[in-house]
Amino acid sequence: MSISPIDVRDVENEVVRLVVDCWRYNFGLKTLGGGYVRHVLAFAERHIVDLETSHVENTPPPWHGGLARWAASTASGGPLDWLATLVFWGAVEWGVRGLLGSPEDELGREYEAIGSSLQARPTVGRFTEIVREALRKSGVRKVEVSWVYGYGDLLSLGRRGSRLTLEFRRGRKRRRYEVVHEDQDALARLEDAIRVLTAREAH
Image (cartoon, rainbow, N blue to C red; front, side, top):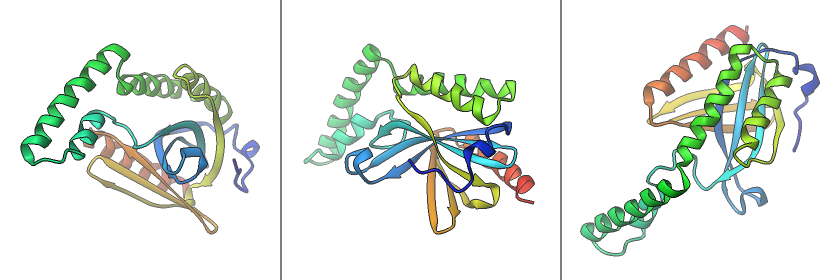
């Protein structure tokens, strides 16, 4: 994993102010052809630190209805066949979730553990350890600093429906991250918080 020109040792004592749990599309060996890698962006006093994890998914969460929607999309018949397939696989998916637990519930527990750490105003170094510890309980093996941005590197921030997109540019490199959330009010509040921090720190 590459580290940006800003050395992580220069930012590890900055206090983390905001955390964004997001996903970045990757085409390569890490995702076995193509998929989304989970990242945690820590907005600190003067920099934004990208923590890349080993958590990979075909599509960003929420996964709810994913199996049923996929099965229905492959149904070869007309609308009734599509609906029957959706209902059948929806019931199967509901049963599997009852036995194994919901991925969304697991994500919720992780968000809570990571978010509650901000009350103690952790430094970037301590926050990295908190994220490692929280995700390790869910089977995520690796959490590493992948990149360090300045606030002026945030190229664009936009929301459409249930997705919030952040794009950064440092030199010739561009990186795009997505936050997916069914609560559009929550996404709007997150977008506002990022804009406030960026406006304050970019000057």
